[in-house]
Length: 356
Image (cartoon, rainbow, N blue to C red):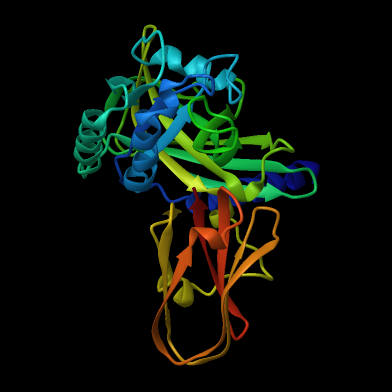
C-alpha cells in the first residue's frame, strides 16, 4: 500500500511538471544580443555612444536583446555577471564598445549604429533557428522570489557543449554618467544571473537531435533596490568550444507583463488597440487607443514605479472608435519608467513608456 501511495504521488508530481512544461511556448525565432560596454565614469560613454545606444534600445529591441554592461568595479553600475560573461566576448581594453553577439561592431559612432542594425536584421530574418528558449516567470510577493522555468528546444541537429544562461536586466536606472549629469536614465542594465554559473545551466554535450529539449527551473530573490515592474528576464543559449563561447540564440520576457493574477486582468481587446509611440519620450509622443463601444467613464493616467499617480492625461466620456492624445515629457515628473493605464468603465489596459 505504501508503495502505491508513493507511486501515485510520483505520478501526480510528474503530471504536474509535464503540464507545466507543455505550457511553455518555445518560439521559432532568431534573436541576437546587442551589448554596449560602458562605465559611469567614462566620458566617452556619455557622448555620441550614449545617443547611439539609446536609439538601439528604441529601434532594435523588438528584434534583439539590447543591454548595457558595466565590468569596471569602479562603475556605479558594476556587475560581476557582466565582468564574467565579457570574458566570452572579443577582447577590448577600454570602453565604450558595442558588440553583436560576442563580436565587436564599433565604438558607438553613426557607422556603428548602421552596421548593428544590418546585423540584427540579418539575424532576425533566419526562419529556422538551431535552438531557442521559452520562458515562464512566477513571482512570490511574500519573499520577493522570482522563479523561472526555461525550456530550451533544438530545431536542428547540432553538436557541441550547450548551456542556457538566465539573466536579470533592469529596464531603467537613474544614476550619474560622466560627460552628462548626475541623474541620467541608463536603459536595460545587466544586473545579475540566475544559478551559480554566469554562463548558465548545462543543456547537453555531444549531438543534440532535432526535437530534443531540456527544462530548467531556477529561482532568484529580487534585490530590495529593484522594482518588479522594472525587470526583464533574458535567456542566452551559449555554445562552448574549449575556452571560447558563442551565442546561439536569445529570448526575453518583460516580468510585469508576463505575470497574471486571477482577480486583476487586463482587457486584451482594449490592450490590442492601445499604443504609445515612441515609447521613449524625449519631448512628446502620441497615445492612441480604440474603443469597441462608447465609454462613459474613461481615464488615461500615468503612474511611476512606486504606483503613485503623476499625471491624468484624459478623464471623461468618449464615443466608440479611434482616439488620439498627446503625451508630453513635461507631464512625467522625472526620468525613468512609467505605466500609462487606460481605464474604460471598469476595464483596463496598460502600456509602458520611458521618460528621458
